[in-house]
Length: 338
Image (tube, rainbow, N blue to C red; front, side):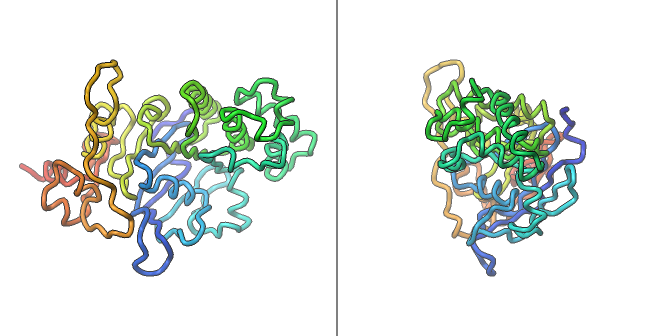
């Protein structure tokens, strides 16, 4: 069920820009990013809190609320029943409702806010099946139990009658995953799906997502700040900083040869896996606020390798290896050198 990275993408994002309001000069949260999701593969979108990851996810499923707004670019869904630019659809349109939940689904960070506290979890799964697939109440209830079993919940018939507050954090997250997978979507967006879960449950959830993605051939966007999760689950990685994608690569290429100074800084700040005791190397400085306009590289003020030309203009994207692209003046300078 897994497709190669050279096959046409199921979801293709081109030059996506998101801002605080639609007026001219509105502060931008996301600056012209490109992403491609392929069937059966997982793309990890990685970066610090506040870099624009979750806002990007909301844009992909057309859930941005004012004052946030898409200012430019396209979000092209080309999966089953596709051939549509999501960015051009009204959020409440029939066309968008037909896509959201059916073809493109999302796992939110906090299952307690994603689940309705006054309905049993089985009913919440069944609702999606009745709405999108036209199942009868009886068939949807039976399928809801099957889905709870599929995501690893014990005694699923009993758990289907439980309310969210009666379940553990790990079980609630599994319920959210079951809802997202109920209609076997072509695209799954997982926004920090293991936040606040203990390490054992986190590993189980990630294994479930990987297995289900391979089983259904789903294209998955995994949003995280945890490079350990990326190494375990992802096929491809996009590193995001202050609304810009600064590096894109296959997961093995990125870990073997990180090319952007920000990526190298993220990896240097991780504790060693061999247990050796050593001081961590933090990235100096702070992320600039989004209201501050930056003409050059967004990372220049925190980069130990920054040069004057880094602040002059946004660096071009350079392919440093097959499928490995980095936006850094240092690489552009190396490429232009004799």
